[in-house]
Amino acid sequence: MPSTQHVLLKQLLTAATGPLARRRPGLAAMRLALEVASLGQLMPWNVFLKDADVDGMAAEWIQPAEATPGRVLLYLHGGGYVLGSLNTHRALIGALAQQCGVNALAINYRKAPEYPFPAALDDAQLAYRWLLNQGYAATDIIVAGDSAGGGLALALLLALRANQEPLPAAAVGLSPWTDLVLPTSVLRRVCQEESQVLEALEIRGWGPLYAAAASLAHPLVSPVRAELYGLPPLLIQISDAEVLGDDVLRFVQKARAAGSPVTLQVFEGLVHWWHLFWLFLPEARVALRRVADFTHQVWAAPEAAKAA
Image (cartoon, rainbow, N blue to C red; front, side):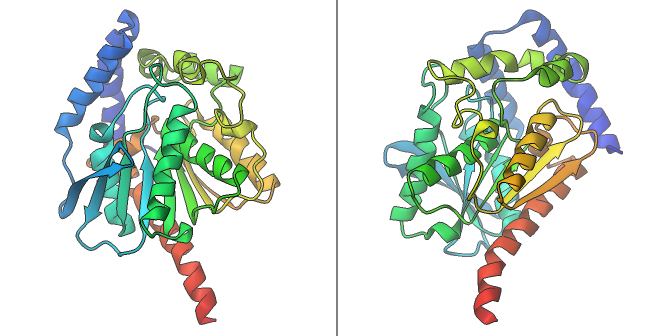
């Protein structure tokens, strides 16, 4: 049963995005609205920010005061490949980094339609290789992301595997966008369950903007359509009420069938992007603690094996 806070949040989102859905604002207006909304974020206490230059790409270190040195969370923000920035997700990344007890590197990867596929994926690979060049071992890196950023994190694993590069210790997808084709089941949910929110964000138009000349079914655009063998441990969180849920479940089933270890955590009745509202949403704080539990287990496993 969703919390009272979530009920209020959903009512607020419906009231705020309903008029936008009817007016169908342009992409520039949506970008500006999201940036303005992000001004109200509050960073967790004792989490510090430091600008970073990742071979010419703007990035930011988000550093809890008591972070474990030598390990890092590479975070890829959501926003349908067309929205979002370091600003919009800074507080969420800070809260997650603090829970996990590690520093996080957030990158301002390029967005469509100005920079379509594979620009975002190239930037994710650039950041990952940059971390390796900074002295981090692949086993000391966990890649994470929400929504489109979650899908991008999974695509990053596939690209690294194809290039025979070392894979990170694990990956975390928070409501990841795994299929940009948007099958009929997804469109049905858009119409029935979250139409005002998702139509306001025009999710159905974002996939083609990102894919551009590539097929929406390209495995590095829609990871659910890839061969999913040989991946590191994955944590996937999803709500049973959000429109991306069916596709995520297909991804999990396919990855498990291919032998890749996947931990699936399903939350009841929550809106897409509920993690962003961690400051006042108890379900979001629970989700972040579960991510932290997963990262601790991933990094503890090799140490336990050595001790044995």
